[in-house]
Length: 262
Image (cartoon, rainbow, N blue to C red; front, side):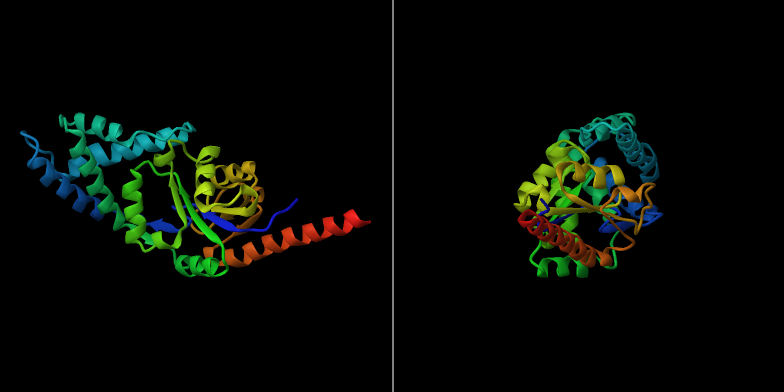
């Protein structure tokens, strides 16, 4: 039996936010700060910011992308990847310093992150309709850093719950990450809609648990939009789509009720 919609769960990257195509200047600023940090903690010559970007930031990013592409459900241990990259430059750092390096890089990346044009109004509209909102993101970085990013962008207060893969240890489309998000918003899968930009992670994964799924193509074009329950070209279309999905559920319930009486 179809169920009414009580919650909307949303992906983060390329759903709520987009990124500068060339965030190099932000990384330079971040790694100049990393250089200064290491100069006070390491008794050896510290590579220039550009070298750190090439040998640490990009190495870390490439490693994360390779792991994602391999399809392993477990989230990477981000600090271990940084440690390996830094040791490749002869920099053996204690865990606290590695954490600080990650913080500085994320502070730099934040300058290249932008909230989509329809996002704030769309979230406001959904909340005004009494829907609970959750965020679910494949993010290797610490939940603390990601939560700080959401707060800095003005997004955190819009959500009843946020879930990151680094928190639960597995990535979308693994069911555990969705189950955690549903628990945080207090809604069963059959009463939730998931919105995201990837078919495998954001459509097929949620659907396996019984959620309805909406594919957004605002910043990413996936090959199989037909797999979704609905497709939107920008997030501003979402409230109307949620209305249609809810109306469809109500119509199905009415039909089933009438049929059962015949």
